[in-house]
Image 1: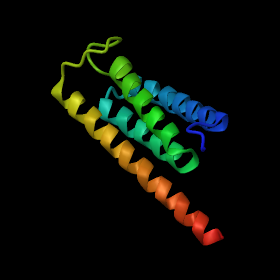
Image 2: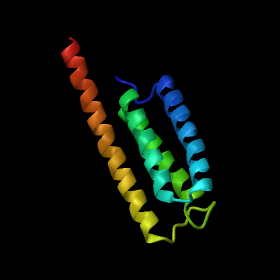
Image 3: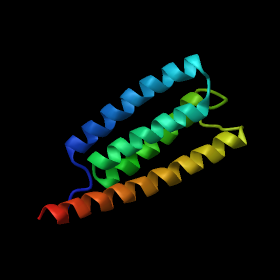
Length: 116
């Protein structure tokens, strides 16, 4: 039986997400563009997807989406979203994160087969 999560995956995911959220707060303070924050979060998902198991990537994407909703959408510091653009962007972010995770997983499987 394979494990869904390893502690190393959890540490990597948390470190990448925290680093990207720190950058996102800085960009949001300077520019104030929520789409830039989502692009940074998407970069975090790609980095986690190529290094960790798919379950870790899914969890990171979900936590990133919740953080985006809570910290970067109006009204701030709540889980309500009033701007339809933010809702659509968040849905697209989650879809792209899931697809990216699948691509990265298949890539790692192919690399393992090649190296054998």
